[in-house]
Image (cartoon, rainbow over all chains, first blue to last red):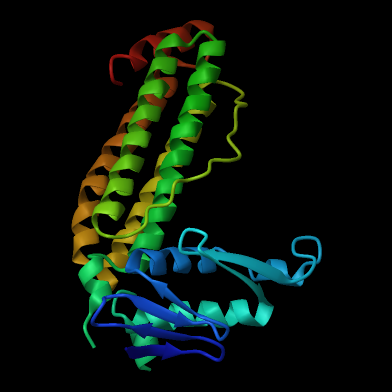
Length: 106
Length: 171
């Protein structure tokens, strides 16, 4: 397995043999197809981080994240969400299908 | 490292995000035209109502075209939620003026995606959007022609009825 990108809490891997992606969440490693990785990106990007700083919108500052068609469930705090957003942004850039390539290169 | 992600998807994720936003816009336009058709029906502008029913269906077709393109490119197309549809209009001219403003907003959005795709060298998306550029030109022209009728024929009761009759003739 090749490490694509490592953030503070998480690591994204790519396996050339089974053509799957793996994210090490610390407690467990989640296996994702490309479509599931795209779905994770969609879910993470749609999380409003501003809501974490507004007690009316997100009282406890936690986010429930369900992955791979509800196979996995994570409860993440603000810092973990920020870190996951970071992993998604840079991870996809390094996978070569995001326009943020130049940002990563610099 | 093998480029597995690129093997699975033909477009950039940034383009996919913008196209998913465009799906939302087209869905919103379709629902807005439906609200306009309803207003026209309520106010006895039957030809204008038919015009907006057709426009609404056309916007949905645009939405589906983008939706299928994303899926066929290996991306994830997001089914849109539609909120905040205005059902209140003061008069027929305002209905068409709002429709034109809506089309201009859609055109701007298409141009923005096209510019981004060109910048990212995402040529598949650039090529796909060319059809929309031409389509938007025609949509705007059609609404501008109808708005011209208000200048030519006036805004009183009989003029409005005559304008409504001409809307069906593709003015």
